[in-house]
Length: 353
Length: 190
Image (cartoon, rainbow over all chains, first blue to last red; front, side):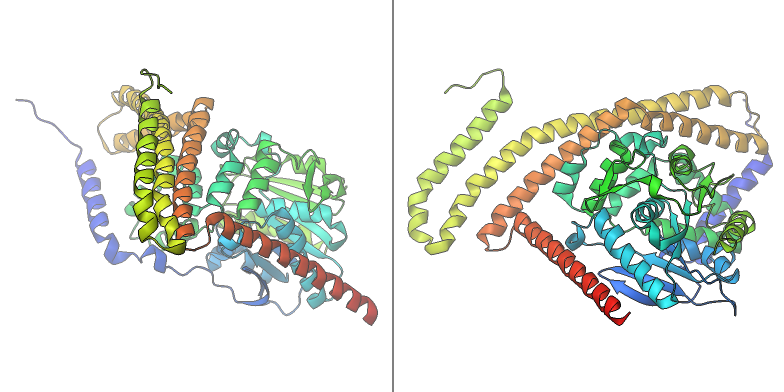
């Protein structure tokens, strides 16, 4: 009779893991009850479902030019303030910046006809005017993240007279150069039929698209790691906050989704200066203000090849392109972003504000 | 008119519509007598709903074909990835480091195989056809709902969409007016 020999360490590891699985509900908070966001703000302007947030200053002296962060149309703005130690907003406030943030809210069926024109020439423009009035300035600095980077780019190209500095963080610009699997799905996607039948892009479908990006690392390994670390309070806290953020994505208005898919991914109009928003042609050559493009080398949501062409398409002579060895979320909500990305951004912005 | 005997779907479709029509005609007289006034439209619902469901049957068959192909692609990729993992697993020692190495190989292999699949043209094409058929089925469902809403004197999806569109356009006009008023007020004060 043969005997199977197991390394006692393997058995120990297996028993530990089983104990963690059994004890997890007692030790760990329910993900949906986790509180995210810690920096205080006032809602200073509202329009439909959109809110403009103004963060309370953390320094006695502030940089004159306010900074408006244009959040993406996927997930929520809380990733910029997910944890006090990794908060993008808090770091900028501590550097003396006057920070505003756009919260797009949760579109309903009533908002299905909202398109690029409404987002850029109405909501965004009204927010910029409001900030200019409140801060008594003629121009502001604008930062756009991910799809918010695209909105900020389009806005700055159409209203360059209102933008002093433009910062784009992992923007979606050149859809044909995007090498992610999501871009592969968009190639033969019948977006007209989709929007006509369903209306807004539902979160459930977006979850599907996210799930095909690194399905085993993000869908299996991540949770195994979590269960192996349930006694590590810091790790658990950070994990649950990110999970909650990932789980809360609002629908995208149908018209905006349609224009996005066609204009950015399928016909790639933006980078070719062929995109029209509110009957006006969007020319990236109008971007003559100082521009800072931040790209994450390990970005699996917006590939660097998709973001970088902006740097070469603008007419600005004061432009900076920085590549960081991190991922899409790591660039804005990690200890790396606190140590490297934010100090560099702060210095760049202070020199120009 | 004769139906091709080699086309079972054609036969089914014709038979379903034929008998629905016949039953509707046969019952139209007594229904007309008993259903007074606007409620008369209830009696015509069945015919319209049957026509929608009959069309939906063909789409369900097509949807299933794309769904089978979708799962086939997933399962083939799974098998290929697992085969490679199994081949590599024989070289891994059975100790703690080995377990960790096996986990790494498993995840990396599956990630590579599945990313390759999701990145392929065959996946993109089939998946989009699957979605397209699902949308066709949803359209049928919407049409059935519209028939019922109409007879209940409620607005249909199309009518609600028209209202939303009208509201959107009105909001836009108001916003433009507000902005031009604001500008002229600002100019006046300056």
